[in-house]
Length: 107
Image (cartoon, rainbow, N blue to C red):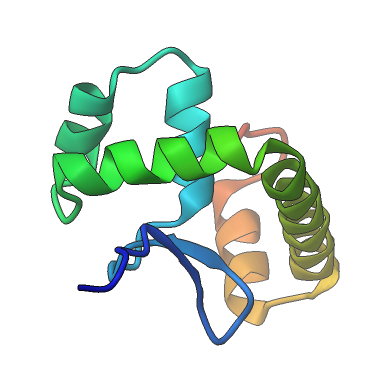
């Protein structure tokens, strides 16, 4: 009988929970916000309660490694956001123009 793996790294270097597409980032963020494993399970129905507990246990036993991973992920997302904002998409420009001068984006 093999040991279960609750966290895996996919082909893009993203840490995922079990065999699902749920990112470890999401489970860790919810856990750090004080959500219970049962609540996290409700938020991510593709996860079993066992997988949620397994992911939290992985995080708690590999805290430094996961925090470094999360820093790298945040840097990557920030880079992608910056590149996206710098790109001039004709559709977005037309939508902004149609909204008119001085109008604010919806919240």
